[in-house]
Image 1: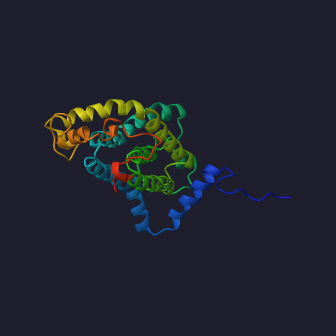
Image 2 (image 1 turned 90 degrees about the horizontal axis):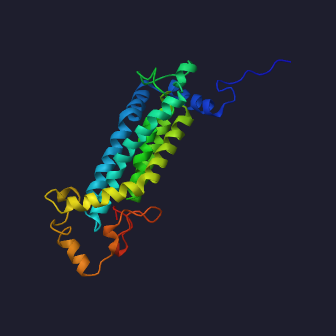
Image 3 (image 1 turned 120 degrees about the vertical axis):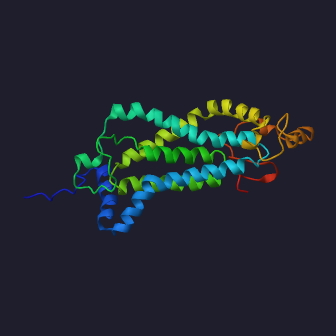
Length: 251
């Protein structure tokens, strides 16, 4: 008795999901494929950079501005560290792009042949920024998280990554951002406080500058204000908690 032919994924959920998502590109109009290609390669990353800029502008207005700015600064720095960590990982795993082993896939981005598939750099960068921003600002972090998930979808749609490449990128980003955040903040927060006492103070605070972090900071200290301005953004607590009930930067 003859057996039914297996699908293109051959029972492999990783490959089956890739074929399913990438298959939508085959039936989509050309303009949509071009749009998704641009979004997946450049658009989402540009959007995340814009969110970092917004986060920096809002962080400068917070009572704990130097610490908040340090948290925003950790976003691009953590991405750089995650990308460095990915260099040995991708070399050890040495996984070729999916279209190399599965020519039935449609590839919408040129120039990927000969590069490693695991882990996805785009997914790592997107999720790294999303998690780092969420530690400072819930609303911006949530928007960035949605963009990071969209980035993962785009990598499959373009036919350049397996789903596990995307998940691996998310996991790598989360590990780097969360595990190294205490060390990073221990360095970045004092650095930002030091900058706030110099002529470059507008980089870390929108309030008046001066010795001791500005007149506003001195007034808060004389008035018995909270000591949170001297602390990095708390991990595991409500990110960006503000005196007076404000829950995040956007409040």
